[in-house]
Image (cartoon, rainbow, N blue to C red; front, side):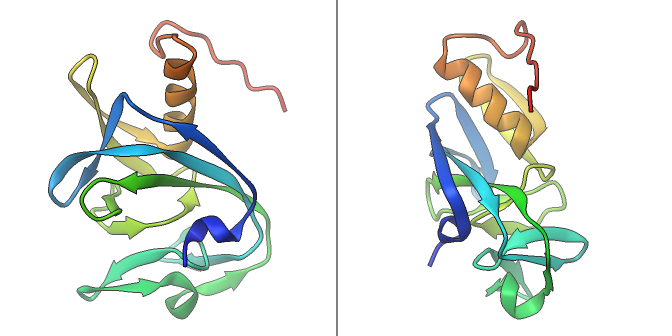
Length: 146
């Protein structure tokens, strides 16, 4: 089961430019899936989808089995099809699989500029969208209209 199943009307944006940090170094991922979810759980002060897997005590566990149910709707992000095991590492050093909030920081590698960066998943979404449109995230102005 995937955290994507917990998303309401998921969106997918393909990625060819960036790699994400894994336990085996930076690896390619096919894209970013994102959408709102209401099936959310809190674990260690962070919000995840129910089917999110997080490495805890050496084994992957479902957040719904170790977290606390929260009653809210939130946009969630999933780096999709990460090469070499479908998992990635966040700023806190934890290994993850499936969806989490856009505020979670990840380390990425830009294959075009050979630059390593620490960005939120929400920032990564914008960077991939700009790249797919042929624009550079460093020189583009992003306006949020909501």
